[in-house]
Length: 179
Image (cartoon, rainbow, N blue to C red; front, top):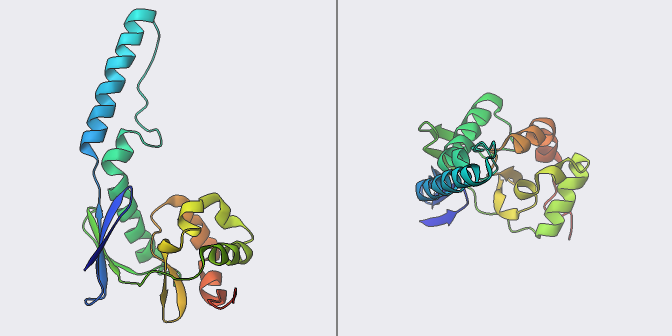
């Protein structure tokens, strides 16, 4: 058993069972402290300077992302795979309302990160550049039956690229390309 931790999810790998379990991370303390800080400082500024200020709850690392970002990513990943069955995606077998997902285990990709990134750019006409985290970090990839698969595909940007280029990547990616 191995583990890995990202900003939104915590993954437990069970290679002997052939599965990975992705748990949503809920950053309750961070969300509460951010909310208290914002409310306190915004109200103080409003009182002192008579400003018309509202609290932005949907910023990149806003309250909703701290609380529900991992759940949303898990759920979107499950629904996307169930709907598309895209061969470039590592299969997601089950989701418990986004709280945790069960995905097929895949050993992490060992290809040189620069070569991986460059080949994905060439195959997609540089469309992967808009989603650098997912397509340019080799830890987000695995090989299944000799074909490259993506492990982390819960974001809308990633799914857009997969919808358009997933089959092409699956069919044409060459692990020996840079050798």
